[in-house]
Figure 1 (tube, helix red, strand yellow):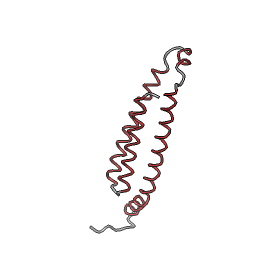
Figure 2 (cartoon, rainbow, N blue to C red):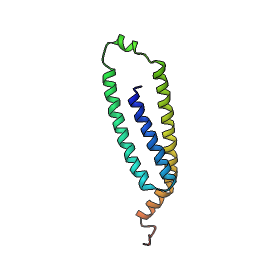
Figure 3 (cartoon, rainbow, N blue to C red):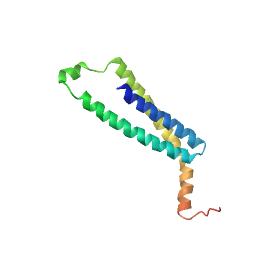
Length: 117
């Protein structure tokens, strides 16, 4: 895996951890802001991955066979997997924390709850 691609995964993980911290603190505006940052990073990752795939796909079959995964590439793949697992764990906890907040929002929007200002 290209080190630049791995850096995108790491940046997404950091933003995910920050989102979780904000959710734990009940700072939902910050969660939404960080979610936007994650969307941007994911878009950039996809663009970079496509660019990487285009350049990796060039060359003969023999050249591609010679560029079989090295131990370094295998370790990068393991790191990516661990990062993705942590992102999913963070996401699950954020969703769990957001559930009561979203229910309150649904009730407010449905007019079932009157907010006194």
